[in-house]
Every structure is written in C-alpha cells, then in structure tokens.
Image (cartoon, rainbow, N blue to C red; front, top):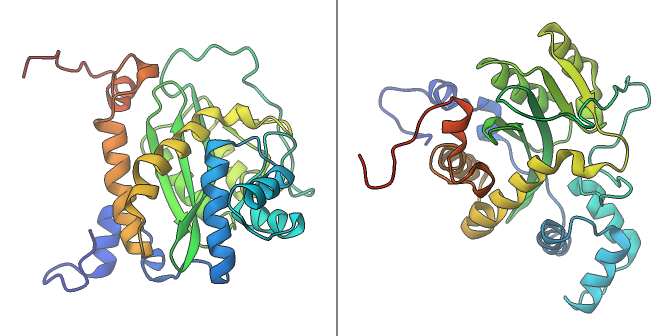
Length: 277
C-alpha cells in the first residue's frame, strides 16, 4: 500500500518496493463518455461470460437483454477500444502490426509436464468509475503461477515489456507464447525473449483458445476481485490486484492442480496435509 505521507519512505521508494512504476501511481485511467463507460461495463461482464461473442451478438445482447439503444458500429468501436475479440476471428486488442515479424505456433501436441516449460501473456480490459485501464499478466502454463503483471492506460507495448522483464528477473521459460498482437510482436518484446534464449510461439489468427489459461485467469480475477471490489482509482486498483495475485498464487486452491496452490506447484513445495500444522 502506498502511503502519501509516510514519514520515512518517499513515494518513489514505496513504488520500487511494491514493483510499481511511479508514473503509474499518478496517471489517470483512459476516459470515455459516461454512457459509453456504462456500455463498456456491460460488454466486459458479458464477454467474460461468453468470450465467443463478436460485436454483432454483443449488440443483440445489449439491445434485447439490457434495453440499450445501440448500433453494431458503436459496439464494434467500443470492443476494439477495450481490446476484446471473439474467438473467431480476432476483432481487436491484439491487432497485428504488418511490419512486425510473426513466429510459428510451437505448442501443438506439446505435453506440458513441468514449471517454466511454457509461459504465456495476454491483456485484458479493467473498468473504473471514471475510465478504464489495461492489465497484462505473465503466467506459467503448468503451475498457473502468475509471474508478473502490469497496468497501463494505453495499449502501447511498454507495459507488456515491463511485465516480461519483471517475470524474467525470477527465471525463464523454454517457450513463451502470445497472440500476434502488436505489443507482443514488437522488436523490443521479441528481442528481450531472444536475448534470454527463449523460443517464441505465437497463436494463429482466430486461435483464442491457445491462451486459454490466461483467459481463465482473467475470468477468475474479474469474478473474484474486480467486480466485487469495484475499485475507484488506479492506486486502489493496484493495491487490490497486488493483494489478489498474492492470494491467487499462495492461497487459492485450484481444482485443475488437484487442489494445490500455484506457488506449491511452481516451486515444488510440499503443502502441509489437512489437520497438520
């Protein structure tokens, strides 16, 4: 938690200790009109439930179930701004940059058997009362451990690179998988992976389920934290996510991991049996 009036630690030092870029502490969320922000909240909630909805189905949903007088052109624009795309074909966030090189998909038929074999990264939209921000995370496929995360009020690639560098400070994977978005195909991002001797894997267009573990993470974070807490400011959101990801990694039991927490799987730590201390 950042204390503006801490007697001994400057805001810069506090940000360093919690791994927060000082600029992030001060910047405002990206803005839209109040009406569009309300629509974007509805879109985000429905898309989290039905990630196969493109802008046409989303328009029908908003009209018939939410009573919103909205046309498909407006919905498409808002979904692009939010970085949401249906599982077929991609609509927006991770819009490819033609000048950036693409890399082959390396995970087809690959058995994931150990931590740090495959890491993955993705971006999601986070609503706030007076705007919105974007959240990127790096996750280990085998353990589901969240290695790093960052917030940004723009979709430029700097915050994705920050998250990658934060994750690489603690180890490295054999393969790093992303979609073909401009943030991940940028020379700075792929160059950092190459410099660390990490093989680069990228999903083919329309293969949204290749990032299924990150998509499940987003659904979990939103239902268990963001939608319940309804953070009002970026600093409050940052503190909340810091607490939630700590809980997610070290306390939340995962059914897919045979009810073991991600940290225990990732670091091969034996958990105490029930009834023991």
